[in-house]
Amino acid sequence: MRDLILASTSSARRALMDGMGIPYRTEAPGVDETVAPHLSAEEAVLELAARKARAVKDRHPGAWVLGADQLVEVGGRILTKPVDRDDARRQLGQLMGRTHDIHTGVCLVGPGGHITEGVERARLTFYRLEPDELERYLDLEEWRGCCGSYRVEGAGQALLQRLEGDRTNVQGLPMVTVVRLLRQAGFPFFERR
Ligand SMILES: Nc1nc2c(ncn2[C@H]2C[C@H](O)[C@@H](COP(=O)(O)OP(=O)(O)OP(=O)(O)O)O2)c(=O)[nH]1
Image (cartoon, rainbow, N blue to C red):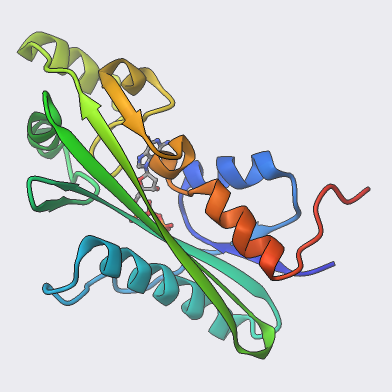
């Protein structure tokens, strides 16, 4: 049985991996997430996904490690996870009535120098909300721990006027890409326990 580690503290990523049903464990990547300012959103999430995966792989040389990173891009600006409710209100205020992109990079590293990666974009258009409705959404605290301050699989789906791309990508892991990387690396699926 291969030792697969998800280099993540994200409950959303764990939920997506759990759904796929192959054995894995998690470990916090514990890396500095600073990147050079000239990088595009795609380049930044790929670099950080690889940085997270490599950091855990260095601690577990014989393991396979999957890392991921996500950014929201709207009007040329980058949004990461909000620090508090006011920050979440500001983020959602930038997304209401507009179209934004979510970029997620994933990287799979393994024994023998194996490294494969992918980056996926989802494009979302949000309804415009009245201030009171926005406050009611903030009360649900779906903003905590989420790039862009919403959860697409939660009440946040009521914000969504249009979604192009893989919905799981929005939640934190583009599972079509994750499955491709795992299959390319020879991972078996549907194993009998
Ligand atoms: N449940 C849920 N989570 C979301 C959604 N959109 C974004 N997220 C979460 C997934 C990730 O945990 C987080 C993206 O931030 P990062 O890529 O920096 O990952 P994070 O620091 O949370 O965890 P990690 O670096 O993997 O330990 O936002 C959503 O619609 N639903």
